Length: 274
Image 1 (cartoon, one colour):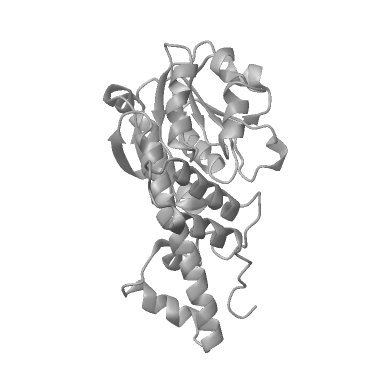
Image 2 (image 1 turned 45 degrees about the vertical axis):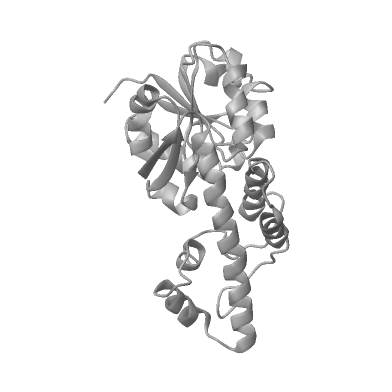
């Protein structure tokens, strides 16, 4: 195995916890950082002490929720941009506005190389180490850290220079958001028509309506959730906002804005028989 030195993962929640577990299982010297370590679901080594976390840290992967938390990790309470003096590579795996991501490179010490590597697949794919990563950065840097992605995922898409991964991810998640709201609407209408949910989902799986959410209704942990500020549906709404921030100048954003409103209007959907 390539000696990459100490690897740290900031944000050890729904996605970050199993990603950190995958790195440890692959033999990498890894530790997590989270401001609320007692509330995490995975049995992984996590600290809330940024000084201890930063010591000898060479590669930092951030998997926090949003830009505010990224700011806190890099420049606020964590201050890892300056506190981690041995830092060589920053990997942004959160889904953030591409404009914000590109701006980070100018705010970091000149010796730190940046990679954006947002991922797709939900918690089940993180636990099964089959995430899809959308990668942006210099080819030589991507080659060096590829073993980390190999440990956590199964599909790797190099999209171009730093920021390209974030751009691709928000476009992908815009589609995922549209699939989510339409699938949930279709299921609600099916209920009103007296159709059996499982039979309809089986039909959709082999027909033109097939999509990720419908295929994963029984595996995706948030498939039946309603919107809440702090849950995964809330994160999906945040991702639509990030996509809108990256819209081309003069683009018609009516449909994405409608999707954003529809995501925020989702209510919980019970499992069949409940």
